[in-house]
Length: 259
Ligand SMILES: [Zn+2]
Ligand SMILES: [Zn+2]
Image (cartoon, rainbow, N blue to C red; front, side, top):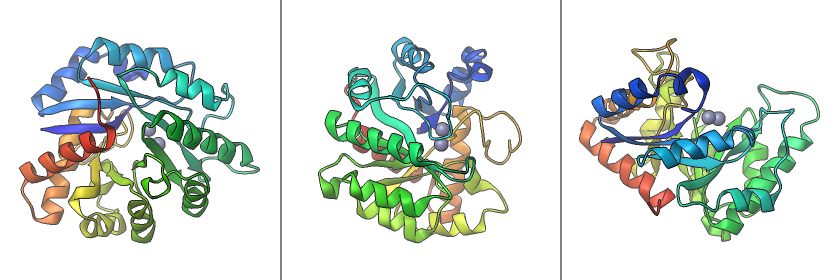
């Protein structure tokens, strides 16, 4: 069995075909999915999905790419996270690829999420793109890692270097690979995945984006995370069952869902 540790099934293109999406999960033995929040206006729908389906978990947070959206406070995030189906804070982080200019607001928003995570003791889901240095610096300054009394979390849809992965792991974080790792062009990322211990790896789809091979270019969905797991098994020369079991155990060890 696999778990999709990061998807956006509340987005209209997936929400509109929920029965099909859930059937595809069951067919591919994907037992759970974590539906990740990207802004506060969408949060009620994310929470509703988690309440409706026992095997769907949720998070609360505001994505770094969402510029014109209500800014969350630490108190607000902590309050919204106070639900057994909310198992993480995020997605949060820094994205210097999609947005340019003065991004101090992004860094402030990231700090707010780390403080909320420390306060409510729920792990962080971190998005980092072309900003790994600042991401790691702020994680350290705010005490995000278990080494600093934080709850750690996951570096999601990882595309950075082995050094960045190791630095995050040292702070107690997990590294999550999406369908990108299955792309022919992703040689460097494949080398990173090969190097990292399976005990620190999660798998995800980031659906509806980034469908893995053989669905590249199509709409992604949580069931397709099985292809990410199968790819990593091939890459590492271990059995698919081993990857499924270990990444599932990692998910539960990190997020510790209460229901
Ligand atoms: Zn992301
Ligand atoms: Zn995402």
